[in-house]
Image (cartoon, rainbow, N blue to C red; front, side, top):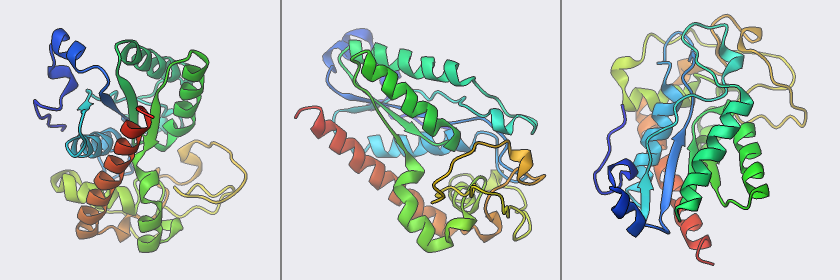
Length: 252
């Protein structure tokens, strides 16, 4: 589902061209292949992260887009068919190994994440890289959308296979979005709040079958493809802005 432009595709470089491009950002999409309720594709997280990264890189000088690392930490979805998952240690090693190769070759590794379950392991990987004196960056695209998403839907409608992800998917690949669940199908009253932008101070990781039989958090019935187009463009612009800040920071 990812389209590459020859001018920005890291994988299209030859080795001598890569040597000449040292100092550039190399953006690596990471995400997941896992259940997304009864209505969204398994690859929703990695496809959205890849699309946002691709279009953001196109707006930034001296930046390349690497091929995505599709499988993430999804053990909490494994009771639902089709879910692929790496162990946390495997995921951390993968991020560290890829970042180290890029860093040793003179690039600035930046991971653009699209999966909530990757946030903590990505942070752990960055900490391990710090111990190894390897400089790398990570960001999660939907964290850049916190304000607009909450303003549009409120926090309880946002979680997993929710109004946000469904709206973006309706914009990017409408032919792959199935019939939406009934309103309120993703409601969950557990503590701590499993919503995407929870403000609960306590944290506990749960398996998704504990929330509901559909594997949802939030309310996909409130999705809107027109809003999905708008918020996707906001995500691209905001991720691009972060990439520019990283590019400036690396020269400071």
